[in-house]
Each structure stands twice: as structure tokens, then as C-alpha cells.
Length: 116
Image (cartoon, rainbow, N blue to C red; front, side):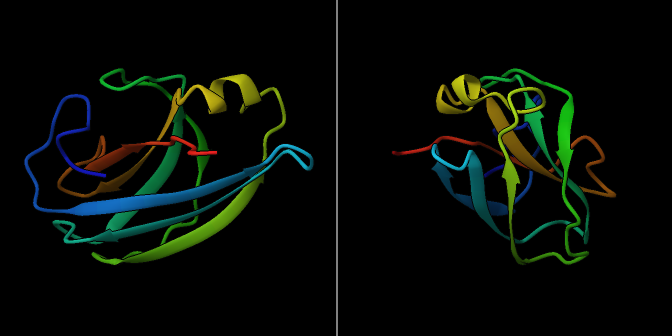
């Protein structure tokens, strides 16, 4: 996750990573987002879609995210076929971003790409 991945790009030294696993049998997506160096406390975080790299999309899942400049957030959600569609998840058409007061549209972003 970087500011350069935001649409439009944001100049920031903040970074982050997304570790996500999807269980096709239970339709459960589990994720851990780790971030550091935000310009201020996180004010919001979302999964957005459908948005390929460089494409801005609406938020479809809001996280209850820690109001910190660095930290880790973990959770899971059901891939219900309505809000989040398995086909699009596997194709990398969703992304996660973290917002701050200085960057209300998002300070860092990363595509939600599954490796399995």
C-alpha cells in the first residue's frame, strides 16, 4: 500500500501491506492490514470495488479501523456474491485504502490480490 497507488496519487511516506486469504468453501475472506507512517491518525478504511489498478471505485465495505498513524487491523467478511463477488475478488478488482484528515479521499491504497 502506497500513496502512489491512490487515484489520483498522493505524496506520502506512509506504507502498508495486505495479507489476505480466501476460503472458497466457506466463502470467507480473512485479511490483515498493516500500516505505518500516516500523516495523521487513520480516519477511515474501506474495501472499494470494482476498481482495477488506477481506477477509483466506491467503498463497499467499511472497517472499524484504529485511529493511529501506524498499526495492524484484522478481520474477515463473507464473499456474498452481491457486495463482494468471488469472480471479481479472484480477478483483483477490489482494493483497500486508508484515509486521514489530510487525505480525505485516501492516503494509501493497495489492490486486494490473492496469491492462491
